[in-house]
Image (tube, rainbow, N blue to C red; front, side, top):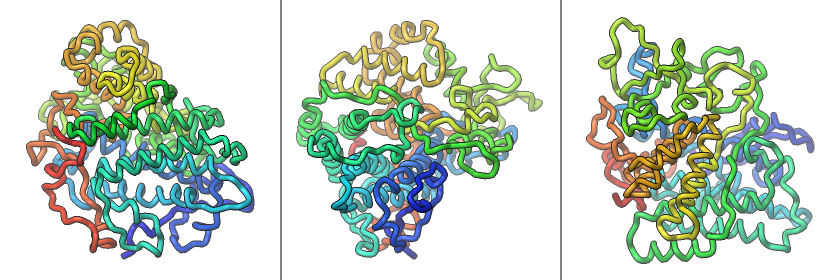
Length: 517
């Protein structure tokens, strides 16, 4: 069986025409000459599209299930999300995360390694360093040790050796610093502009992202990489974090939602809708998409966290994150693993579904063509708030915290209605009143990531333990939730000489290096 590192996605472009439709066409033949001869401006949009699709669909689903946000609609389905609620992590459990990201990030490597004497592609290379680091961090956060230095070598590296996860993290910072340096270098003034190659944008507006905006994104990813290690107390790690964050107090960070849209459409039969809408919304004909729309329901915990039951503060984001057919003023959740035991008898209850703030509550062209969220402004602000609170950078932690809440509200189209004032007066969810400021920051990040970037919520929960009252599934077969994924079957078969030995228990006990709780 071919190991996954031989795979590189290549996009067929007719003649010299770059079209949005081309970004969806994929060829995975690793020996195709287009891998080495296709120019960076052709490869980049497809690389962004395929990696982004994995993030907003499969990874988002997994994370929302692991963080107790999503329940299953037991009224219409028998045993929904059974393996997820039992925490049945095997080598085939969500193996598409590894397979897709490990293969698709090869496109970024191809761009970085591309050599040309005629055209300066350093803008494309800088962006590729950033995007590869962004997705490689997720691979480390979910799997730990893995091939890094020998990956993406094609036939020259069919059985790549494994690198230490913490060493990979250090390499990611180096790559991000390289990208920032390339953007800052005056010698790159003649670099080819990204132009149509850039299908990423701020707040869904195509073509509005400058190289300075890319530098702000690189700073934000770097901040996230370093903060992920902040719970570690050894002197070497703390010195590394402090050194790398020195000077970032005055740096620009992401202040708008970073989104992806290569030309999503709702045209019948083309299968090119926004991947979140296509997975959790509707088909082009208006029918439910693969039953996911009616399969996903909020958990009781997710509803009670926002309706004031658990903390006394009603959060207006509830009405934007979730909806309820027939009675929009009432929100009905269900515990993970509940097999009808806690629902009213008679089958009259209608469970809530994904809401209007996500654009998947009703079939619409607007929902199908909307941009996909890669990193939100809210996440960036909460990263800054934590870094300030921990003393790594200067600034107002309270200000960044408030900005994060406001950005989350704006993204969902929610009206504050006095929420931020009430939250700030409540321990555990507001900065002002909380004895543990980090707990409040992570709580608000958890809410802001709900339904949008679930995988980040799961990783942050593993790092910090917040929210601290997150319930286990009723059908869980272990006393704790998983902390990582297991190496997939493709790796066990294709790189058996190097893949570390694992057992099922490792998914619960073999923590990622930064997880010291």
